[in-house]
Amino acid sequence: MFEPLPDIPRLYTALAEAGACLTYMSLLRRQVPAWRLASGALVGFPVLIVCQLVAGALPVSLWLAGMVSAVALMGATIRLGTGISLVEAAHLTFRAFILAELAASLVWQLLVYFSPAPPRISAGPLLGVCVLYAVFFCLARALERRNIPADEPLVLDHSDLWLGATITVITFAMSNLSFVSTSTPFSGRLGPEIFYIRTLVDLCGYAALYAQQERIVQIRTAAELASIEARLESQHSQYLQSKTDIEAIGRAHHDLKHQIALLRSQIDPQAREAGFDEIDRQMAALGQRYHSGNPVLDVLLTSKGRICAAEGIDFTVIADGSLLSGMTSMDIATLFGNALDNAIEASRRVADTSHRIIKVMLTGRGQMAVIRIENWFVGDLDASPDGTLRTMKSDRDHHGYGVKSIRWTARKYGGEATTSAEGNWFALTVLLPRAPQEAVPDAIS
Image (cartoon, rainbow, N blue to C red; front, side):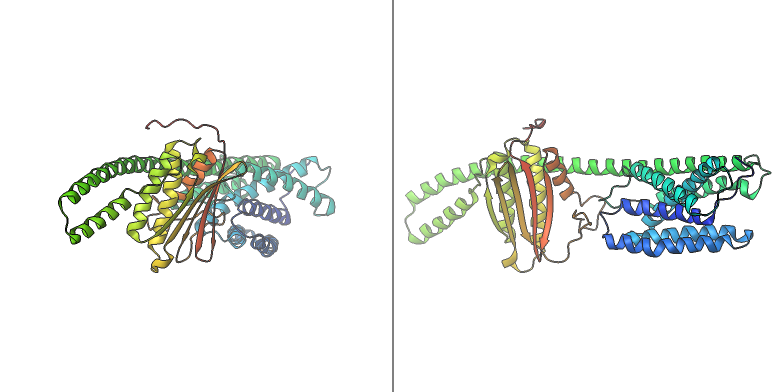
């Protein structure tokens, strides 16, 4: 080992920055096509390398400008390769920059410590650096996967961005303080000491950014769960109210039939008879109910069917409700209530009444129960790359959890929910095991 410790070659710094960008870009692979990731890497990485090589030839007075340019290029590379928003790209850029600083400092320390002579840019040391970078960034990617889901967009506030920027600036300033001046209480004076401080500070900065992202995910998850649970309660309450209303209508229907029969026995004119026939027909329609084999589903279908009739929507149902025997009433209300509400909302937007169509099918196929709800829609669907629908309503903070609630309910029973659209025909498909594990019974029956 020797002193002082030589500075990190610019090429190695550029490779660390490229590896950090690739780490975060690859975490979002399900949100963007592969060609975009490849184009971002092919365009951005050579530019990063050229930028660092040019910055290395500039005077020391322009060192900070060179670093700012490198950070800006990292952000441009991440945005080009992923297509995410400026706020999301900036957030990931801060993390990638500190991760690159940590990787470059740590790997260079190890390389110098185990080298018998000052390492130079040659095939052997370059290969060793690339191998160490690959191991380091693979470990970092595995660590980041829990906080940056591959199939969901980042949800960030501007306060999150400013906090990340603050952590990044402080980390960078403290880790490079010894290179600016050795006459401060926080500076090192020897080569190994300076790089040790740099590596340790970068590690602390990365840990702070990781903890920040973990907290962001926890807050987002808690908000989503609260919204989903509120929607579950709302759907179950609607089911209970619909059940009460339908029972009252059934009683009224039964009573009116007797009243009409009594009036017929007292009044004989043909005009009055025709009027009573019309009342009888309307009451028969009012008393019509679905009989799927599941009383909870029957109430939901009857309730939603009447809404469809009032809205001029053709509502067709083929359902074997016995397939839902293992589900709680709340989960049935959540699954079908959300799905039918979404379909009715979409059908209301269709100006052509002949295209206001909703089809419901619940059948068994092998060991699976298949729920398929189809409807006509107009306009463009706002969907994320994984197929999750985003709300078309302006209040995105309190809406857009319908399909999430359905998927969450399906997964609760070991199933899955998917959406698809062909032309103007939208379909929601839910697959459930035919004999799901019994869930916790409802608190309200």
